[in-house]
Length: 97
Image 1 (cartoon, rainbow, N blue to C red):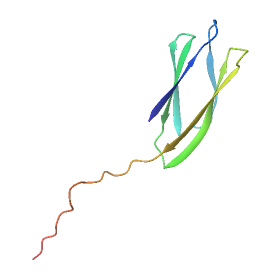
Image 2 (tube, rainbow, N blue to C red; image 1 turned 45 degrees about the vertical axis):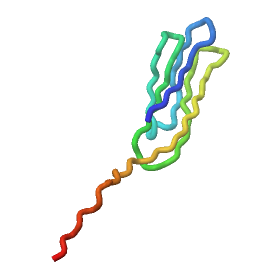
Image 3 (cartoon, rainbow, N blue to C red; image 1 turned 180 degrees about the vertical axis):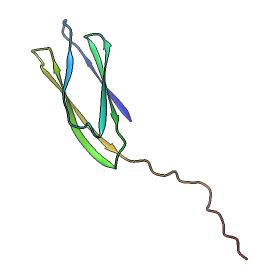
Image 4 (cartoon, one colour; image 1 turned 30 degrees about the vertical axis):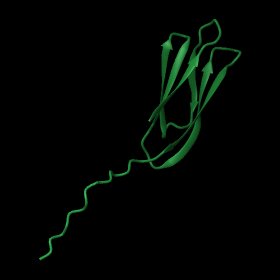
């Protein structure tokens, strides 16, 4: 499963983002996409398959804005592994002799 977060500059100056801390590297991957150069970014978070569990953590980004030097994005989720498909067919009958 993938979820995304949009970050947009609200000031009339370029925005630069740099990841500084991510504590869910074994459970979730992330990818930063610069949609509009130095203005709009989208961070995509994707589950890494693993055991059933609930997880939570943070991605911290450093900015070049003295007004907001750091952005923290809280990440939480629940991973449920794939269950084997349930067959709608009845089990084969044993022949009686």
